[in-house]
Image (cartoon, rainbow, N blue to C red):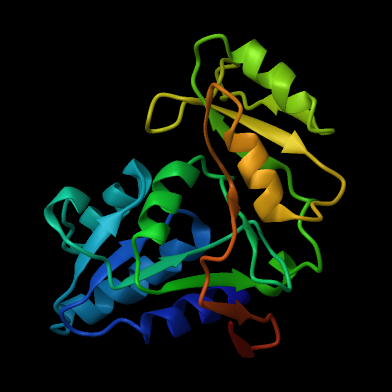
Length: 223
């Protein structure tokens, strides 16, 4: 937990007065929200853009001002976590099911900062299952086509033993690869499958990776 705390605290240092800030989803971002709430109470003037209903609820609880993304022209900074980060700054995201909105905000941001603890760092992506958001209609057809990419896909289930639904009303397929050699190529192939909405590969988007280490150190990697 200390690694997440340290990384989250460091990320908030990049937020300046007057910024529009994309707020990701997940446990590390919760640390960011806690720290950001303190800064807002001290007088920091920002507008947040939530990437999920979960984040929106947490931000409202902490009285962090939010704005509808449709009302703004640009986003200054996006802060989010990741499930895996490679040495090439490529990511796997989507464990919390918010990958579509996260990618939409990340690609609209002038700067994208990822906050992780050290166990999320890998040489190559693939150990963590790759989430793919798909439409419910004819979902088995989509899953069969994903399987042709030499992976083992499985529909994510909720605690009620029914398919998990994203904030957008879609399903998530978790695709198990051994190693992902060319993330950008794979991302394109996945998105070409009819029924796929978006995938959890984030390539050529990250500017800064902040790594919190359990021994109390913070490592900042710039691309």
